[in-house]
Amino acid sequence: MQVHKTQDYISFGYNQQLNDKLVSKIQNAKKNKEYLTTLLKLNNLTNDTENLLRKAEKNKRYALVNKLADVFIEFKTFLAINIERIFPNLNYTAIESASYLQEIAKEQIENPEHWLCAVASGLTTSLMYDSYNEEDNAHQIIGILPEGMSIEEFLAQNGLTPADGSAENNKKEVDKNKDKKKEKNEKRGKEFVKEYIPTESSKLGFASLGGMKNLKKLLNDRILTALKNPELAKLDEIEYGKKMPKGILLYGPPGCGKTTIVEHLSTEAGVPLLKLEAGTLGSKYIHETSERIDAAFDYAESRAKEKPVLLFLDDADALLLDRGMTSSESRMEEMSSFLNRIQKAGENNVIFVAATNKYDLLDEAVKSRFQEQIFVDLPDKDARKAIIKLFMEQRSKGRELANDNTALEYLALKTDGFPIRALKMISDKASLEALNDGRRNIKTKDFDKIIAKSQNMKVKSNEYKTKNDRTPIGFHQ
Image 1 (tube, rainbow, N blue to C red):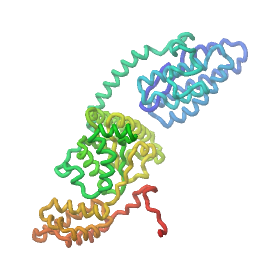
Image 2 (cartoon, one colour):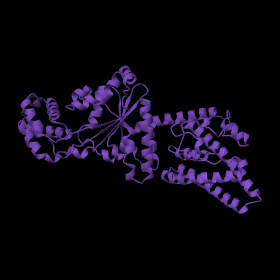
Image 3 (tube, one colour):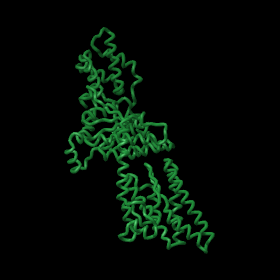
Image 4 (cartoon, rainbow, N blue to C red):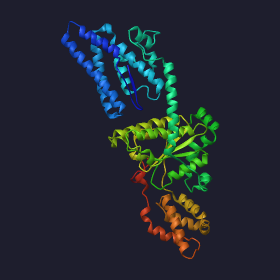
């Protein structure tokens, strides 16, 4: 038997020795020749289908693998039933099932995250009927092996050669190869991420971020406390089951500071922030994007050995688009890579953070990986006031305005509907108005002029909310 490994699927080859025995019995049979000849053709067809499965899998044609697997499992089961009926002494079902289980057990050691694929699971379940329990270990299957006998011993007893080498020797070789590959990936992965270096302003953490009181409070409760005080976080988990999310999704209108929030979060927590460079992850070559995704995650995990790391993907919808909206096998492969790695990252001290303006376009399986999903809305009046005050405090000619509460209240009302990005642009242009008018102090009239010209920058927040976030439309009493 041969096993073919790929990142996402594992197909299992038929037992060649058992197949040879079956062919010999059919060719030497003297009765039911016509029926047995047909059975032999069906057997050859199942073998050809398995070979085709492995070939499609090797080329990562996953859509074809899924279609073939659906047909193959039913066909193989039908064939096994008929072979058992004609040649009960061949012990076909038990031996073939044990061979599959041997390969699954071997794969469990080599690739624990993929060891029970749909093809193998479906096939062994079908062949062994109700005797197979998915929660059992492959070496403890009820009703297939005699009590106390291993799969290898069972196959040898029936004149068949077990898989090459012991599981222990195989594991050492596999672990050695995996370590080499991981080390190579860690070095290569640095190309696809950019480490965030705090600015003089962001070094202050949340203190340099205007407004967003509710959001800061939420982030502090769910993430910062755990990162700053691991002992307290562990106690909270033991006593109340409270766990820090390993996946965080920020969504909402563009220009509302999602990226800035993540940058200040890393500064506030004192942990590295690695930004996934979506442009460098993409490749025109088949399979290359998935390999780059793996390399980037391996690098992040290597950085997280001593302290947690934030791994950030902006514009997540560009790479994590709903699979129902594409038929591309390469996009399916990329999505599968992300799903596997997001799950694994959380177990390796990497907190995966993503941001998007298009929540509805994200794949549902991806959304489920984020334990914390936070809507980042347009700044409210108090937040706008705090943001403009912060921008003006950074300019010596704006500090008089920054200390004028009446002026700030006025500007906060005038800028309703503007995202943070627009508020910064308005503040910059208002400052230039004062500069060009004799280098005087910045006044509200400078803002009035720019706000009047910038009405097209307003955003309708409701368009970016999920159905649960949206305010119901109707009559209120």
